[in-house]
Length: 457
Image 1 (cartoon, helix red, strand yellow):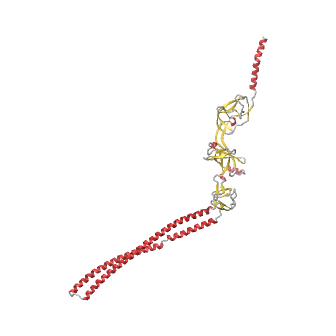
Image 2 (image 1 turned 60 degrees about the vertical axis):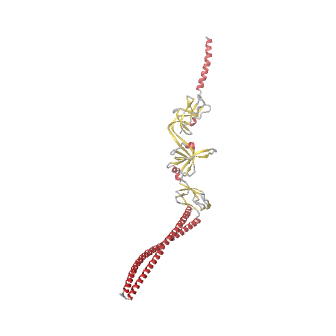
Image 3 (image 1 turned 120 degrees about the vertical axis):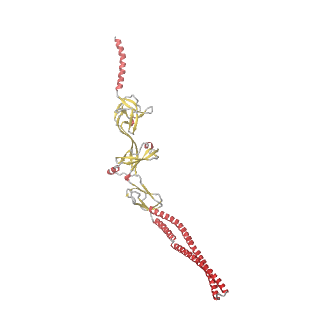
């Protein structure tokens, strides 16, 4: 009997010792780990980047042509109204050029006025046409006179023949016969004279017929000369317009209301065309421009809400108004070439007034920080981003704390921010997850969770 008891002691004692050690190991708390509780809330995905203020539509005023600029007294910050004179070129030479061009145009206009004055020629033409009509009437009258004299010659010849017959029979005297012969001769002379008069009238008519032709030829020549002068006038008018535009451009005026943002030139000096003088813009239209990485800009849409910080400790609000379609290469501070996209952001109504009311100033090219909200989810299950790690299959994993033991849990994620991630599958509200799990942590390890990380979106 004693031997049997001793045998049971030898068997049970090691088993009890092993079980006790196991229970002790199981009940012994593991190393502390930082944990966070899965919570529901609103998660807003965003893109964050440094940015700067920008004045849209700022006007850069430059030298319109080579010349001497007079002193520019306007200081940066000076308000100007549309049309205000802000800079001026020396104008003596320009004034002379305008005067010469105007005088040349006046000379040509005077010559054109002379050439276009056809009063004398038109009077001569009217008179010539009147004489031609009169001569035509004279010619017709001469023809009638010829006809009358021809009739008179016929009658005189008949009468002379009759008188000669009567003389042969002694019926008339010699005097009567001579009178009949004289009348016949006079009739022939009158006919010849009337024919001569008719020829003279026709000759005069031919001379007067040349008058209108000469006048028309003269008028045509004046027309050609006027056409040439008209072309010369057009060239002279163009030179005058160029000279006047150059003179007008010598007075550089503000294209719109605003303030002087920059002044590149102050003192009188000779400058080439295109040299920048002033920049004028309206600070009431101040925007923000951020150059986002192209992969981030692809998620940004017009109308997205934006937080703008870095202005005297204030956070202002705005919205995206334009995502530029063209990316560009920009070298980072580390010397890496990056593809970036410019995004324009407008301040919400009243935000710039808040800055002024706070006694702060916000001008062009001020450095700010922007957070562009690209998406949001309400009542989302959220965990800290640092709780995630990749599993062997490449999927997302977390360590969930279950009864003091780390359990590797596959999860599916949705929206994410640098701080928090939405979990759409794998966890429930109230679960504990380990944040920044140690590299040597494995599933089944005993841990002591220290809940010290709030989840925020």
